[in-house]
Image (cartoon, rainbow, N blue to C red; front, top):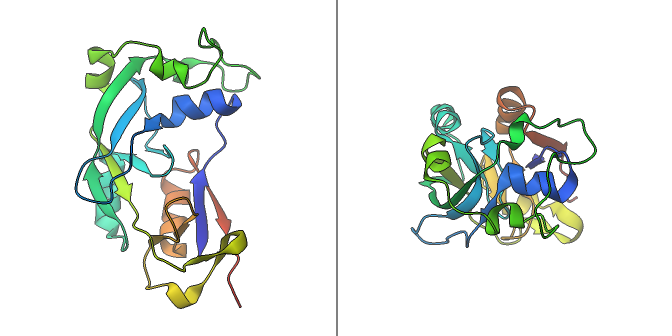
Length: 188
């Protein structure tokens, strides 16, 4: 069992907002995830906390894998701002530009929606991973007694996202620049 996380974005919190965007309330019912983000570029997988978003092409490949434990739901884009951050020097210590306020989220919150940037984005899907009570113990330890052979699972809304070795290996192969996987500590 592995823990799935985002790869480290450049520029700290500034890069994190540009890579992942801002998720509205991740639904527990059938309503779509509402997402605000930069465009027209989006990584194939992103992690607007506390959920996972994948592009249409990665979603198609993921469906072919038939992972157990998660539902794919179409994302509703509520704001897409045009920032070509993917063309910035990712090796630089600072982003090419900062929001006027200095607050990372203002890359998105203080800019106007761009219909052109929004239409350039592919369809996006939330990889909704429901909670499995008792799956994550204190300190992030995985408890296999509450595991039902899912490829994706989560102990609580704010807990780790655990992935099977099968799915973890697939993600490491398909999107290596965008994910970080580490071996989970397993209870006793």
